[in-house]
Image (cartoon, rainbow, N blue to C red; front, side, top):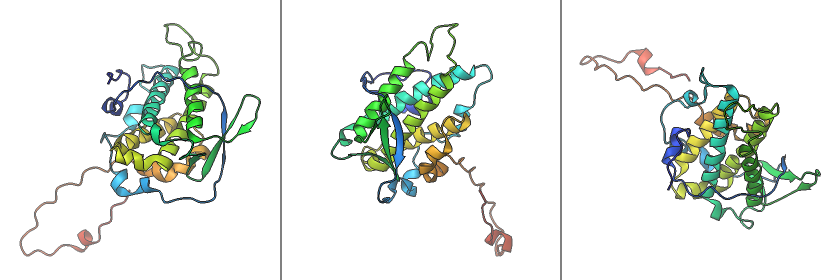
Length: 256
């Protein structure tokens, strides 16, 4: 294990930290196509969606602090999400093979890659994730794009590149839920995945980093995991002896 950097969100500190030095090789752009049928979504069941590793409002973690530059904030969070999603995928990578995942699927979508010449390629899920991580690794370690030295300017293309990274990372998260949720549950990591996914979605929504048309395939999960936690119910006062409950208390409906 290695200590979590101070800049990482709280839930990342609860994850193991194996070697993240693997460098992937390839570049491409995704496109979607619907496969024949949609399977039952185990990850939507209440027994799983209620499990998190934090119980506070994640919105507080994504709001831009007044004293922080927007690009600095986007750079820090994007790099963190890349590392965490990379780490989360690594926990099930042995189950994501060319035989088990012959296409990069997520819900009703199959993702394809386009090489630099525009050639469309259908690849296995592990190949696709390799492509994603290769591109992300290349971008976040490029001093001309993600500068770390004082006084270094961000390029004009910075926001568009952050959007590209976030779009790719969303595909990996969606595949984790769709194809590897059973393995995640078996490893007792569903709480980490739920918290990471909710944090990521709230972040990209806050700064409009991923087109809603891209994330709509997971809207059912997003609305469950990203909904603010309801306030704790007040302790009811003891009722008077032999007093009948009022009609209003019998018919009360909680609205959210």
